[in-house]
Image 1 (cartoon, one colour):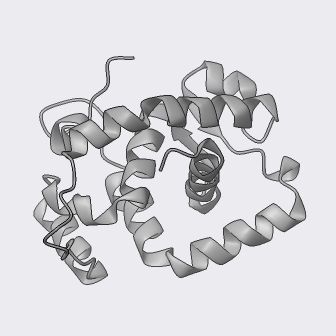
Image 2: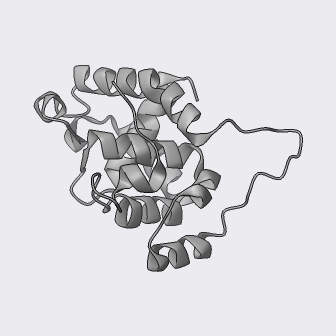
Length: 160
């Protein structure tokens, strides 16, 4: 969780799986959070059609009675520095477009990704294909703002 390299890999996986390879940074942060903690999607307010699709994923709840998971909001705030550091590193290596990054978007530079890393991303994305599809096409398509926006639906908000 607190590894900026692993975080960067997760974000690249999300961008790689997106048709345009471009995601607004704040949306990417939320999608990354749920890729890391998919069981916490249960707590999100979703439209009924999105909830129905979520149920088909059959993501298990945390079963260990001795594990107390901090609140999603607390976990999300804890990830802030790691996520930001990861994106800055990806932009510095031009794995994401530095100009788009400065404009608030993460745009994956597919041509800059080494072949071995592309293979690792593709392999990992195959394993989580249904979850990635749900995150990108269902959760990621929700506007950030508004009463039914991503911020309100998830209660994941940062003051950066």
